[in-house]
Length: 440
Image 1: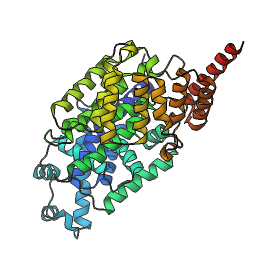
Image 2 (image 1 turned 135 degrees about the vertical axis):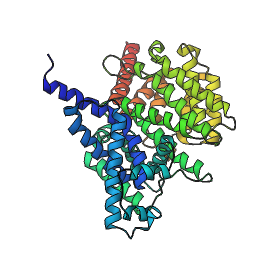
Image 3 (image 1 turned 90 degrees about the vertical axis):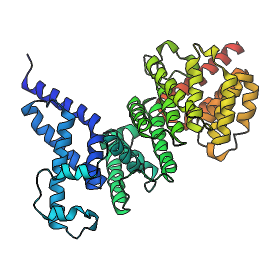
Image 4 (image 1 turned 120 degrees about the vertical axis):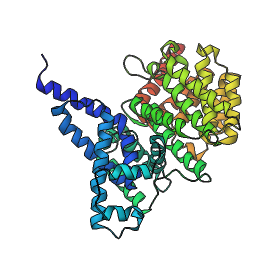
């Protein structure tokens, strides 16, 4: 028999699930009315509180998303009435001021909404560009995006990034204040500025996904919830961005990269949660649906034509692995060629290091080690634990176990992720055992 408490908890979970799905739409739509993202979030939160109060008593409405939207719009009406009565000097109310100073009917928000007629897709795109505005720091853009578009609480974001909740809360508050003080318009940028601004959006999604895919610190190898949020937001942006923009191919390329990378999640850890490296993974556990989605997104990117950018190239790299039924079937020569192209469009020491791995697989560990050794003095890789890790792997293949062991230990000392440290120390210990056996 279901108890009242159990029913209440079930409805509360339903409210939270609906909020996670619908909050971005509600905030985006209300922001178009009030022209302030911070205020829009407050009004949407008011609607959430109302749902938590009413739904356990009245039951779930037939259309929970519409209920939240209507309630938030009514809160917007109350806010706009107050603005009209107490802040008539606000010039930004413009043509709407006379109507608000007169008798305002309950239909006012609907009338204002019609006057600013756009579909919900445009509202969401505006919210994406606002949350990822370059006026904000990268950390602030990430936090605000996860808050407004991902529906995550400050506590959830803080736990994902292993920082105190007050730090995340302050970033979000400061970000909204910065947007207001900078008078950042709630709009899709004009055509000339669109590619640059969209690049900022893609950067945020890429950062969020990467933190979920390979957590920089903590006890977990991955944080799949962050990957899922980045994928969901990437799909939204991909559907909203006009296909005629040159950067549209990059949007689909990023979606392809995230979908295919995420497909490996079930195989990336063993039963004890320990990391399993790419070449050791059971590819039968890779998610075929995500692979199909990724390959479809890559096909869309390639169909748009033009020179491939860094995200499309990385999507193509991920596709090479996805298409190989076994690790031995991987087309490493093709992967090297793709890295050659990536180095040209997005040169960085990390890309060079990954290229060295591919060269080592395609043309032998000695060739790869030569390239890695050329990166040892690179200052930007001074604290990058994957450099000694890659070097150790190549040294192992060359039979230089003592050197490899030292490099694995050095990499373990550099990482802040407990699971990575365990993996690296385990590989070092295995070499110690092998060396001991050889001596005897």
